[in-house]
Image (cartoon, rainbow over all chains, first blue to last red):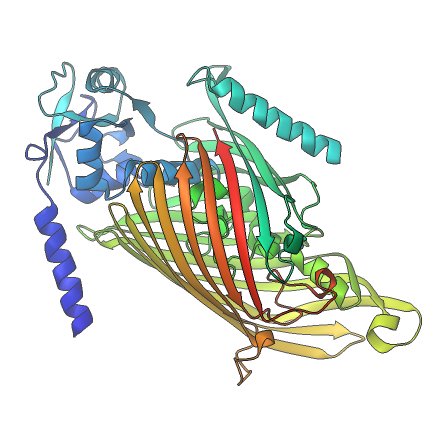
Length: 141
Length: 402
């Protein structure tokens, strides 16, 4: 019974902690070739953890990272649940077991947005107030 | 062989050095395809108060604690990937600078729920089996030795065969990931199993195992919470020579062979991650019998578990602790005997000097040393004065990756 209460409290706390992208000051952007206007939180997380490499109607998708920025801290906290160091360790575990590679990584919102705009299937995140021509904004459900 | 290993080490150092100058240097383009080149190197120092540990003369302090690797891989199409990694280590008398192909395989992904890997593939088992030798990924300098004994890395690290794998989304409850495999594993002639057998008068020359198994895990069942189970079935055989003087007290030697029967391992694991906090626990049970030609039949029921917690207080600093317990034979009734258990309490500080260079400072407070077939750090030939029941060990380990 105590375990059940703990699990419920944990789930409630996590739901409360979850916010939509606008509230946490970021937006999820995608190349126009991505044929959806929304993603579930799970699918977004799976794309960035590279266990989901395709979307129905789109085909191959590619996560794009921004490092050590307010946007990346907000994104990782809200959707991935890992620190930047833990996420990089995860990517390195893929690289050093042959299972994957480290996603393209940029240091600024403008560079991230520019890469997403020119790369088929690319999905990234930037600060909510970033001007990002040539990309679409995805709703996260 | 020594020369080749050292040359590889120098190459890795040189690559890392040049990597400081430019961020994308480890991406080569050949025929329009990008080839990623990555490597790692780690060097440790270990000192203990009593018993010598992990085949190193730790009671007087030892730097014989080195490993490194280098890999290259490329994504040929969106669905097809190939790559290979060389690995080498010298830890006391383990590894002996003999480079080996760590993994080398092709990976074709038909869909997120179905992929196939063929070649030499690292074995997925529990949280860390396939990454146990990648020190830079872990908070601890020594993973819990009950479940991931450094000596026995070669026993389960990889198989030459094929894997099927995939993931399924679960609509709001994370994803389920599976892996199934079958393959062969050669005897690790420079590992703890062969080294430990020497103390029993057996010189193993060759052998290996046919392995099959699988792993099923539910990632983010609740946010940050993962649980899983792994299975391994194997048929092990080894051949060599037994020293009759040492075993029976009569002069001479005789051919020796053994095979394992009913060799099964089951491992349960769980992990909870929230921001800088990470909690983990794993439990394994391995039951096996050995049929030795010329000697007696023998069976055992090994068990081990650990609980670990780590907390990153800043991007540069992380602390961790674990409690690990190993029982070589669950049939024993008196676990207070040092030969019937190995308990280990560890505390560590992991300092990231840069994003690719780290230093770990770690203390181990161990109780017990297990039996002759535990192969977990304590060997009679390294401790001719006799094993003591307690061992305090301090480890410094530094390394980098690129």
